[in-house]
Amino acid sequence: MHYFSIIALLFLGAAIGALIVALQNQRRRSRKLRQRFQDHEGKEHRMFTFLHDLGQSIENDPSSAVLSRIIVDGIDKVVTARGGAIYFVSEDGVFLNPSYVSDECPPLIGIPQDVQKRAERDPRALESHVRLSRVPVTDGIMGYALSAGEPIHVSDVKDHPSFRDAFLSYTGDVSALVSPLRHAGKDLGVLVVARSHDDGAFSENDFAVFRSAAEQSSFAIGNARIHREAHEKRAMESELRTAREVQRILLPQESPVVPGFRISGTNLPARIISGDYYDYIDLGGGKFGIVIADVSGKGVPAGLIMAMCRSALRSVAPGEMSPSKVLAAVNRQLFPDIREDMFISMAYGILDAATGKLTLSRAGHDPALCYRQADGSVTTLRSPGLALGIDSGDVFERVTRDQEVELRPGDCVLFYTDGVKEAIDAQEEEYGIDRMAASFKAAAPSGAEAVLQRVQAELKEFTGECAQMDDITLVAIEKR
Image 1 (tube, rainbow, N blue to C red):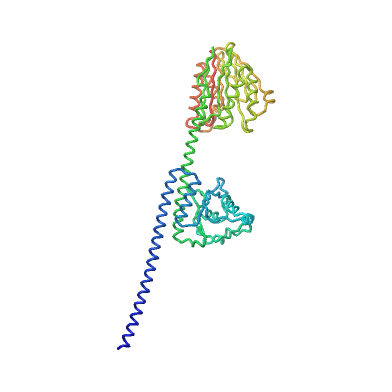
Image 2: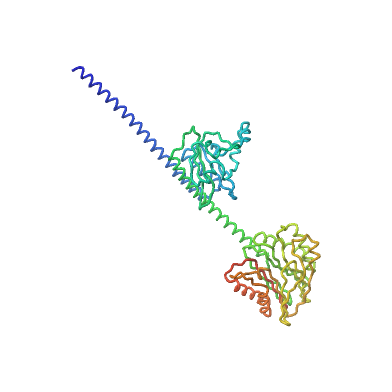
């Protein structure tokens, strides 16, 4: 009996020992589950914090560098990486340029041998190379991810095929998560986070979270760029409207009062800024300068040249009664500052109220139209001349000449820029000089204002809904 009691006690002890072991194992499993749950909960909390911070940063319209830092540092915390970086595709699509590389980020690009040698003497050489070097879009793990078009998990960077190059080497024990950044079908850049092998490997859950964070980052960067571009466009439009107001002030605010004459002019820019201009200058002694000009090209560059031209002409016109000499002086002033692919066509006339004579010089500008009331004819005033900005002076002054025209009551002269005759309709047919001359002839008996009104009305009827392709300027002079 005693023997069986001992056996029973032994079995009981073994059972209790097994139960204790089982309980200990269960506790360990429970602790691991709790730890996993806490890790998951912590990662989820960090993800929500990252998304919240990302949303707030976008509202503040950050720069690309600031937004890159927020994204990299935020994702580093979410997946507990050692560091990370964002590289953006250059405008020409050839390189990946570093936007932000975190302080403790392991090198993520191949290191040239000469840089490695310098780094042995000065560790800052390596850091400088990593932070400043752009990477061809086809190179390294970032170029690989960009071409793959999807996130990749590189467990050992140095073994990646993209680093098998005789001139580049990678020796670090580093694993990385890499994702292309795309928005609206366009490659923006690459996001990468990394760990040293000593920090442990990235898990599948880390990769899944990183993939999601990269998608949100792409969306944030893309939207930030759209918002920034829209803001810059609005700012530019505002500046252009201000410039247009300044330019409008440079044009005549009212018609000049010239005894025996009526003068009317208008300027219709194709864009916000016009490259055309016209002006009236009181020269004293009953004489008035009348100018019309057209700068090659359109927009801001043409508008700036126009302002220079106006200033130059007003500075030399007083005291000089030869229009061709005035144009020669303007040409010599402007020639050094005009690009080789730009020029200015100009017509400048001096009207003598006492004699009724118009002395005209034409620097490569379209010939003015002259209506004679006596016989109802329309002729062109073709004084010889070279456009401003083509020659430094000698040839210009040899070619450009004055032409004198005597105007009688009822006669009318029309200056215009080529935006009038070159306007096109829906069939891409030009308005042309013949239509303009016919319109001018029909309206001239009614005076200068009627000429401008009729030409503009018929031009609008001809072009219909077609966009205005060039600046339009008209100046009409009527002898009463």
